[in-house]
Image 1 (cartoon, rainbow, N blue to C red):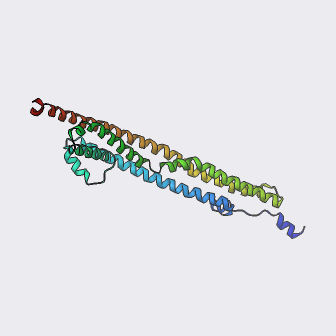
Image 2 (image 1 turned 60 degrees about the vertical axis):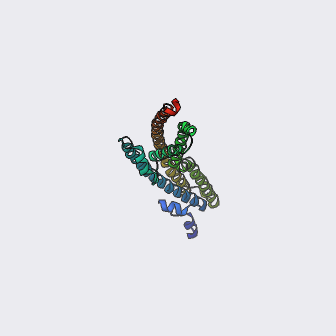
Image 3 (image 1 turned 120 degrees about the vertical axis):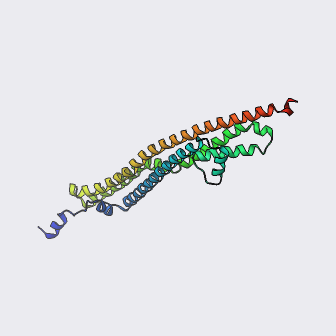
Amino acid sequence: MNPADVAQAAPVAHDLSFFGLFWQAHFIVKLVMIGLLAASVWCWAIIVDKTLLYSRTKRAMDRFEDVFWSGQSLEDLYRNLQGRPATGLAAVFVAAMREWKRSFEGSARSFQSLPQRIDKVLDVTIQREVERLNARLTVLASIGSAGPYIGLFGTVVGIMNSFTSIAASKNTSLAVVAPGIAEALFATAIGLFAAIPAVLAYNKLNSEVGKLQSRLEGFADEFSAILSRQVDERIGHAGRSPANAA
C-alpha cells in the first residue's frame, strides 16, 4: 500500500478536553460559547449582588422596626433619618413624615385631605423600592429563557459544519463524526450551564422581593393608620376649640 494512502486513512487525533473542544470549534460556535460564558458570569454577578442586597435590606428593616416600635418619638426618628439616604422601611417612613410636615404649612383643607395624600406617597415610595429591588432580575429571566436556544444555535452550526467536513472527506467513520458533534453539543452544554442557575436564581430572588414588598406594604398600612388617627384627633380638637364653639 502506498504510504500516502496509509497516512490519509489514519484517523486524525482530536483533543476532546473542554479547551480542545472550544479551540477546534467553528468560529461561530466559538462566539456562541464566549457569549454564553460571559452571560453566565453576568448572571452570577447579579445573583451575588442581589443576595447581599436583600440580606442587607432585611437587616435594615429589622433594625428600623426595633427602633420604630421602641416608643421613640416619631419627630426624633424623622430628624435622625431625613439627612441620610433612606431605603426600605426607612424610606417609606421618611416619605410619609415629609408629607405630614408639609401639611402643617398649608391650609386646614389640605390638612383634612392628608390621609389620602399620605397613602399616595406610600404607594409611590413602595413602588420605587420594589423597582430598586427588582433591578436587573429581568436579565436572569432573559438568560434563563434564551440561553438554551442560543446554545442550540451553536450546536446546529457545529453539526452543519461537521457534516460538511464529512462530505468533503468522504469518510463516515465514528472517529471522524464524533469530535465535530462533541464540539457542537458542547455549545448546548454551556447554554444549559448559563440558563439553569439563572432560572433557579430568578425564581428564588423574585420570591424574596415578594416577601420584602409584603413587609413594606404591611408597615405602610400600619403607619398610615397611626397618622390617620392623629389627623382625626387634630381635627376633633380643632372642632371643639372655643372659636368653633362660638
